[in-house]
Image (cartoon, rainbow, N blue to C red):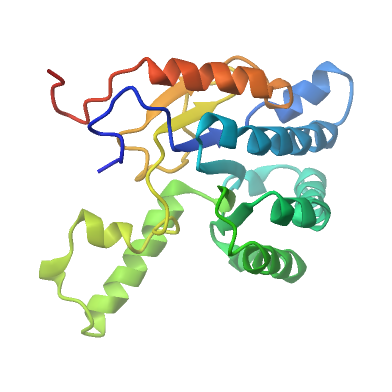
Length: 242
């Protein structure tokens, strides 16, 4: 159960963000979509830096979905290059600023150089504990649950687990996010009001905030305002608050 169940007025410890609107932001300026993705990457740095002041211990961002492979080859290739460059350029600052980085998603389709950089960054920042930044890369909620179910089935098939012992907690232990608490708040930028296959299992009791701002314009100040709105909500988790 989420940690703030008994105190509905507390701020969110875990915030997840669907960073939407990079392409439209660039097109509004007559620039290619990758220009918007570059601007969006810079915004990530600002939001991560703002987390400690707001008591946000965990930040999970949706960087690339399993469906994003449908985009043009030029955009996909540009994004993969952007991810590699971001890791290379930000690794030192992330380490020095106490940020622990994890990646979730299926790495099998990613190129070897990118996967190696991801592994290295996770290892480099493994002892940090100020902010836990999780990057969802080639991630889809349905794909994650499917992969977890396959691993769970294998455990049963090989006799290491009985089907009688399987419950929601057991399945959660096979998810990419098994070491993380469920998100308290999910934010989506750009005015779209859908969850786009993001953290489907984990966000069952999350609060949602849909904001009109395109991701490259989503400032630390607006982030703070969204968190303040969350603090005014009553979270019942299916029960009744007296």
